[in-house]
Length: 276
Ligand SMILES: *[C@@H]1O[C@H](CO)[C@@H](O)[C@H](O)[C@H]1NC(C)=O
Ligand SMILES: *[C@@H]1O[C@H](CO)[C@@H](O)[C@H](O)[C@H]1NC(C)=O
Ligand SMILES: *[C@@H]1O[C@H](CO)[C@@H](O)[C@H](O)[C@H]1NC(C)=O
Ligand SMILES: *[C@@H]1O[C@H](CO)[C@@H](O)[C@H](O)[C@H]1NC(C)=O
Image (cartoon, rainbow, N blue to C red; front, side):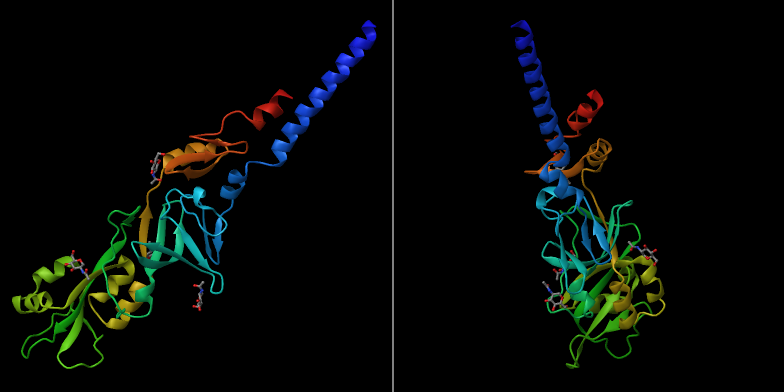
């Protein structure tokens, strides 16, 4: 009787152990879906990106903020991001320095977009990288009168397709305008519209000596650096613990194999293996 009871007890114990092992093994084989989602990179042509970006195979919870959304044109294998209603093509991702090199798509087709507007990074997760220089484009200006000599650093382009007495100008630095003679400041002050566009400082280097429309177009086309800020130190802690960074309803979240945590992965499958 006693031995039967014992054997019943030990087989139940074995069964229980078996169940525990299978459940744990299943956990190991099948990590949390959100962990799996966020382990994938955004991958489009030459562009690969991870946290704080989402898009492509990465659902929105893998991003740091809803606006850090990348889209891929699968035909052209080109990547885009839209910030404050302006769409930019992403040319490079420098993860170590947290810099995207981007170019405004409306300026990829020339200096005369249908609706020129300022590039703004204020109240966005981005700031301009240190190697960025602003160029100011003045649209719809009265042409310089006779006897007014345009300074060498004042660039000229033409969006008005030959309509009489208006023209377009650009200056490669904001301070330059201040040093112009009064007649030119007056001219620039009377232009229909003024727009600031960032460009790579190196690409702009040749422009002051030779401010041609072609050179400006080429310089803008090379893109500029937009540095992103995210919860980088939180993410580093999460990654060090084996997790994938993401967010949940606006809060930083660390997606781990077993489940999401606020900051870092604790316990779970690792400790099971150790205890075995
Ligand atoms: C992708 O790019 C091609 C070529 O520029 C364009 O015709 C197409 O509409 C784009 N697709 C999407 C989804 O934007
Ligand atoms: C761009 O910003 C400048 C300076 O803030 C402003 O004077 C100008 O009107 C803006 N241009 C447009 C098209 O909104
Ligand atoms: C600016 O141009 C230089 C020289 O081509 C390049 O090394 C640098 O990476 C560019 N900066 C950005 C943010 O793309
Ligand atoms: C950083 O995390 C905090 C707390 O989770 C969140 O409120 C904030 O929106 C996050 N910021 C960014 C830039 O992701």
